[in-house]
View: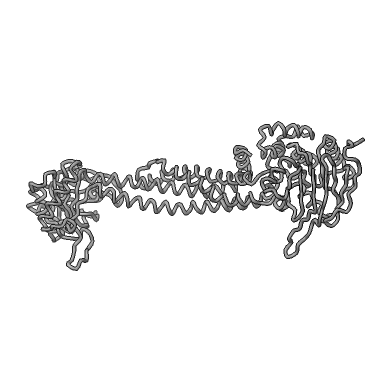
Length: 407
Length: 231
């Protein structure tokens, strides 16, 4: 029997029991839909993380202290060291051997409770150089930034991130007002332009103040948590990184670069780390969704087994009038493939609808890619073949006379 | 055309073995019209299934058209059933979801015949059902269903027509119609073998074989098999 005829037969049989067909398809729709939705959402989340990292500033290198190392070789967590000093930052700025650096800002931060009248919020208070704006490609929405003079005079001036400004002042003008950071009054001189970014990656939830002021009045230590360096262009990132490494190794009297007590990471490094983290998460979620797909596949197998038992007599009749094993096998295999493919196509649409809603809800970009539907299509037809094969083979190998006698 | 030598068939029924056929030796020539009779349990349906290549004998030899049937694979048997044999089952065995036309065309679909729809239409017209082509089997009368079953058996133009109680579920008038149709086919040269327990139906055949307890009890030639029916 030719394939077209067999396909027609499969459609007729499936339309003959619409409710059962619909329920079997539903299992696949949910499975494929979940996989497509999670992959699409995952890609959207990755996109969102990438976007917010790229707003950290172009050509940015971050020097952070290495892990604190005891004599016994027990290492603390990365960044726990105190190896970076203000002098290091100043050396990077002024050293004649570092030629590819445009601006440097040493930074130290900690979360504090910040209050204004009855409003309060908890935010990251970052002590920075007056060069912060140019290093991080940041701009002010209103007011001014603190200056180098403010830093040296330990001025209690603060620049608020957009979120902090809204939280504390609502729509009122914060410039010139005084906020309490850890019960110490700071005068608000400026507000940063909103960078967007959501949830755990918000860069608007920040308060900037002169580094020395923060160190002396809030942190009570002269530690530096990071030195942000802006290279002169994106082409010299590697050179800049090498020059800074050489300089700092010299300053710290370390001969073996492998034992360096600091790390230099570029924005690209951070990007790839964050991307790989979100992809891992996406993969994990898609894996969980794939389990529901497996359950759907088992549902198909179950339905097909019931179907061939019910239609044993039909199989007997077909064999009696000349159907070969292959004819019966393809007939039932086509039925299961039609089921899973229909489920797959509906599942792709369902998955896109779901991820569209999800992306609106999580305010991440909604991107349609052809990767997810392609995979879903392949997987659903594979499921049809894999889970349909056993029942179809069972039907194909029935003895005609036993099948005809089946009541 | 058909040579059966010492055919036995046993079924396992739980711990016991039931021997349906105990040694049948039989030759049926091309163009014969044979009725197989016998009480229920005598093995007549089993014999019919073996002749129709639906079932294989436990022991013995079956040669159909010079081919030793017991040596064939399942697919080769399917091919024999498709090309050489037409079946009319006692319970009709039509597929209820399909139209009558498609039911009749189905054996030709398995033979990959591109003209199957035309051929099926023609046979259905021959049995007087040209106006019911698109009906389903539950939309026509019992006698019409039986005629559809006959049409499906004939559509491949088989040399051998097998019928299991072809009139069993029909009233006498419809049964007679079917028998006349069979006789006409036999006149055209088709070999017909039918199982029946009604002597008046068997009277239409030219040769009557009676089975009892899995053995041939009698084999009576009522008419010479070349003699056209009704003369």
